Image 1 (cartoon, one colour):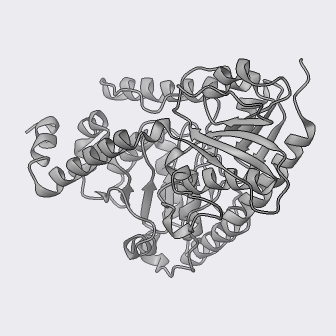
Image 2 (tube, rainbow, N blue to C red):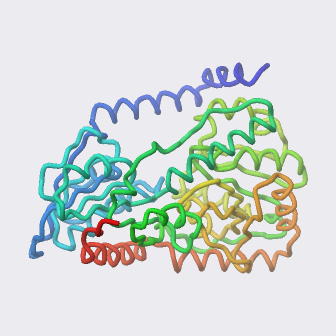
Image 3 (cartoon, rainbow, N blue to C red):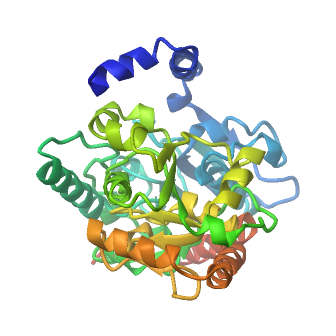
Length: 416
């Protein structure tokens, strides 16, 4: 039976049909609520002097949680991605500084600025469209949460071409970024990715001042005990959409040739059907590889999973700073990463891959699995300590506010 047939048969199972129905219902709900056309208006706290208006485009679902004065109850904020809370914190930062905020979706191409905004912030392509309609003294801010499209897209295309060369068949691109001129019109860039030279360089060529911001994390974890003598041979892949972009194809091929090591995959594999068909044997018919699927990091299941695995392997070809890996570091996983993941590593807190070739992955994974329990415990403690010191909501808020204050003080960038 071929993989395509197996995919269709899975939909006949109750769990497969239920997943499909849930996704369709969620899509319809978004359409009915007109999430991508939402525009919210928020006022500064009472007693704060009003300095003007600011326009922000990011995750509208997050903005829709905010009703009236006061901060959103954090228990209502989903923890599936850092951008939920970060979107709200960006708005709260401007409010605390005394600005009224109009907030909309980064997908809202119908919105046109009509106010005399003091600043306008977007994460992708809207800034280039807004620029001609904004006042001359409006400070235009690009909030960069990926590498620039001129680096991001070719990096993914290279991975896709390499896969086709190895397997004789290809899969379609996922999560490409539309070419745009937002960077060129920006007066400043707030860049998710501290101490990440690769992603910094993807924006530096345009000459706009860059303000690195540490990615936040949705949850903090108490230390998770592990039996490293057993856990050292077990590895996690922890990611979301864009499976080739994030290197899962290479990880699968590496582990398929290493039956002595185990891999558990956490991510929405069944949502990329071409990839799943191509790698069906590795995903579902290889004894040392297990697909867990999407996992809620707030559940005991996540902590149990982390306790059984010593390390996380992730070799994306382009990120700004990967939030999922930061989450696993908070939970004590030893990171084995490509430099393009955007997470700075030293030998004391993880393993930085020399390259992402399959032979390199195998030799690195075997080296890590062969380390003593004491050595892995030390790496785990250092990774968790680094994440606690650098990647929390409190630190994001402090660094972001200081950056925005500097950006607004500097004003519009002089013409080059």
